[in-house]
Image 1 (spheres, rainbow, N blue to C red):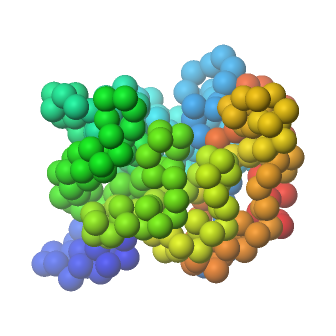
Image 2 (image 1 turned 90 degrees about the vertical axis):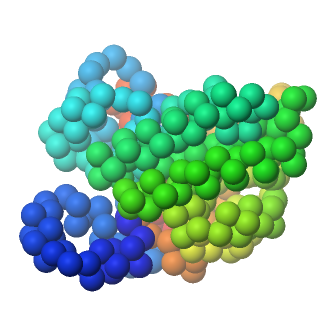
Length: 302
């Protein structure tokens, strides 16, 4: 979903009427923003398991009831587009493929340059697929990278990609993950405010945040800066019983700590509409995909 301000600017340019006449209906469908609270169902490509080609997997996703799929970057454009069109799915988002392996926060400038190249390629991937947003893990805090270094380096690299994002009409959406970096809603807002660009917002992950805070508080704080949403469950009880925080992700949707009615209400109040993207295990079989779709449908229904 492209930035409405950028779209108005585009329509004002010379010759825009001719250009507009040549655009296909799929582009308009991707740009039209439904009313707040009207959600669509999507699934992250990395959670679609089983055997088969990209086309076969997309048909299985569509058959399960999903409206869209969040693709990974660095895939073959022709194959993805053929599968998208054959299945009837939409692609609302594309996830950077190398943001963990070549993070924008790395001490080596050559590695950071690789990360920036991956970020830019993902923007191009999203443009090719008709997606309006990409998912970016901005950096990683570890023994070699301090919080402050991660903050500074990642912002520097993201700013270098903003001109391309604006040119393509695709937003960069930072995700909250377990990277020892941004762990409070105030930090998230300060990060976005420092970047200060309408082309950089947030890809909010409901499950990832349970370890650090309340998803509803985050949504209320981020508000219209939320570009896309990951639906993922987390169980504090499972984590505590096992002594392993990662085991908290073993809970199925609707069986963890998330207050889903409160989350969808908060998203609606924040003006969010469009795709809720499940990033949840279980999509290895047609039955598993249908179960995920049904559970996501219950979340949307409240």
